[in-house]
Length: 157
Image 1 (cartoon, rainbow, N blue to C red):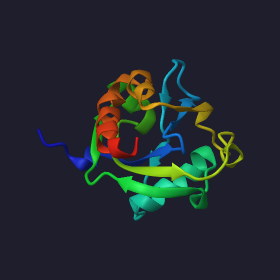
Image 2 (image 1 turned 90 degrees about the vertical axis):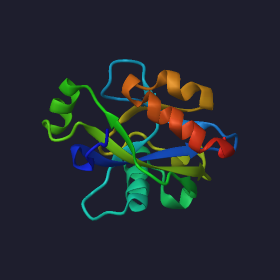
Image 3 (image 1 turned 90 degrees about the horizontal axis):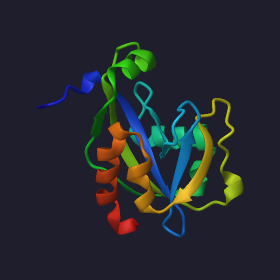
Image 4 (image 1 turned 180 degrees about the vertical axis):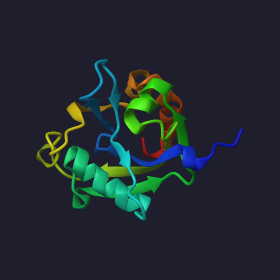
């Protein structure tokens, strides 16, 4: 079944890896469970996804574009649907979920270049994890996307 892109909010995701090939994850500030995720965020109207990724990275985790190197990006969009009650709360029923363009970055800064205590914080904590940590620790409706990303970027991990 073909999904209608208009039913899914345009979004970018960033897999950020360090020199040890560990992946940056943050613990969501607005979620009571112990789920961790990679940074992601909406694409503004007329904004290119690669520009949105760098903007969102700085807004969410304080990492500036001169502290990362773009290694790869997915060629297509990944879609995920969220539970209906969550969609009603988040987007007032406008979207069924999100369609995402993902980018892989190498972090070239230091821990002091990371700041999760931003103007509008999304994470209460962060850590660097191995690839095996990702799928078991993400909300269930994103597990398929995270599995695809691990396959897509496996040569860098």
